Image 1 (cartoon, rainbow, N blue to C red):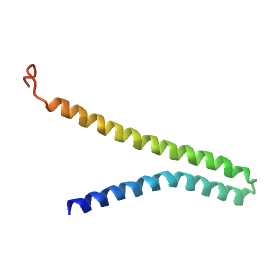
Image 2 (cartoon, rainbow, N blue to C red):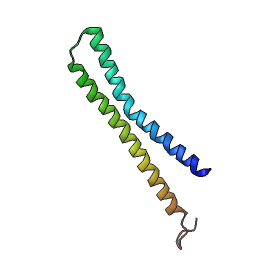
Image 3 (cartoon, rainbow, N blue to C red):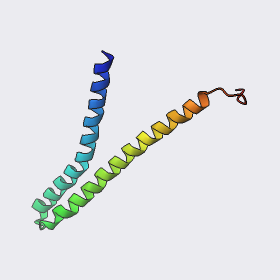
Image 4 (spheres, rainbow, N blue to C red):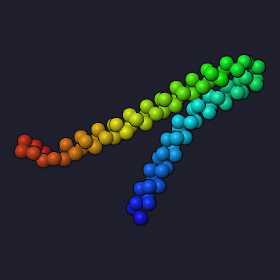
Length: 90
């Protein structure tokens, strides 16, 4: 049973990560569609929205990467602190 909960947890994280990457791009393109229909702006606005959406997705990916790296660093520090050595009295 532990195996299934582990698999479902990792699948949930992967799905959330995928949605977090796609959402900024879709929001920016949706905003460009609205601007284009509302004020009759040319099709070039979609390129601007695409690049802003990619920027938002890139920031999301960077934040997820940094949180994973920080989590690994914290666990390594905790492992080093938990070792009892000759000089460590506390």
